Length: 312
Image 1 (cartoon, rainbow, N blue to C red):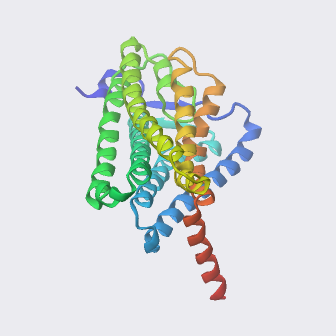
Image 2: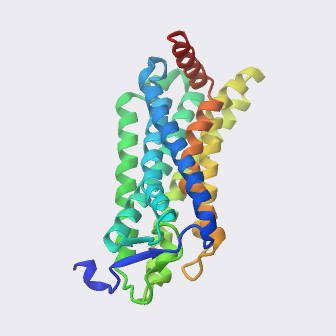
Image 3: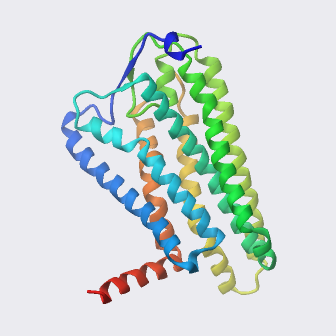
């Protein structure tokens, strides 16, 4: 059945980031800067990893994929949000809203599974260093990444179908700056309760399954680090996974706060603030954290800087 025939709404309007119009120019330039840093950081990370053979290892292969996902993840939301900040009409078509939500959900799900792959990679490197090359083969790395993308995009089909097959006839004003589950369910005329339960089940399955992989991996990692004889060895081993642990914690904490502290009946300003962090700020911070805390990446970046200075 055509979903367009099930709703009287053909266009949605966004309430935006803030009701204060005087803040719009400041917010526009601030988030334009955030997006510029996100693009430069993630594209730069992809370039650095591809350009230097010393970084052609499984850990940096997964980091490359994370940067690619973060770039598209931020691009699915930010350009539209920026145009709305300087436009009087913050509208999006029904189909456009569905597509935005699908790609946002698919890329968010893909990210959590890539974070799981990165945790597994660190587990193999620290807990089984002698067999690491045999465990993390090029073929296995590609299979893990492709599986993450397949699961992520397939998982996004269910909430997208569920939400956009509801009837929307009360209002077309989305109390948010992009198409997200809680504010969309507020607008439904048909009972969204079953849809809300189904979405929570899928979000839980996605986030908790990937979180279990990360937690189990780090339990083994910490156990192996504590068994090391010298503090220097312990510090070196932990430094290879500290960046991943920080990025994973930021992403999961904000996602859980956003989706499990709010309900379909209310979506307040603090919920928008939390969603800003994980949808706009986290993709910017990930490459910065990896570049600032990873000695190998810093060494390569310094090589690029010195090479550029010597050419002047």
